[in-house]
Amino acid sequence: MTAVDDRSGLAGQLARFVLIGGFCALVDFGVYQGLLALGLWVHLAKAISFVAGTTTAYLLNRRFTFNAAGGAGQLGGFVLLYTVTFFVNVGTNALMLHFGLPIALAWVVAQGLATAINFVMLRTVVFRAR
Image 1 (spheres, rainbow, N blue to C red):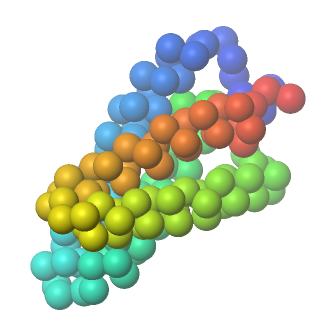
Image 2 (spheres, rainbow, N blue to C red):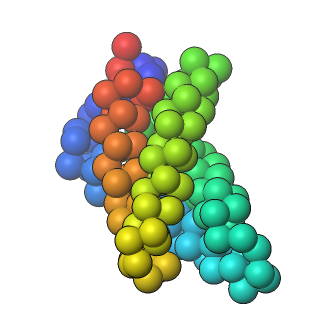
């Protein structure tokens, strides 16, 4: 099996990515709101929730979106990508809060930007057919 099963095509992958992403976003947002309710500092809560959503995203997308075999190279690429998008996500969230957006809207903007970056990079770099 190749690194990515391309039989499903871009449309199938995108549909699965969006569905899984929606679920992972619920994990992220739920953890975020839970930690905020416990009084955790907003930026630390965002960082922890991002990691929770990201871990879920890796496990589900590797298997169901890209049908990838896995391996150290893919895991390393995923970690590198999500390290970058972590800073994009948390930084965008902080910037949106600085400009006065409500917490939920700041989260949506940050999540949307990180999600777009992740799909393109996962499909073309991390889980690409070799």
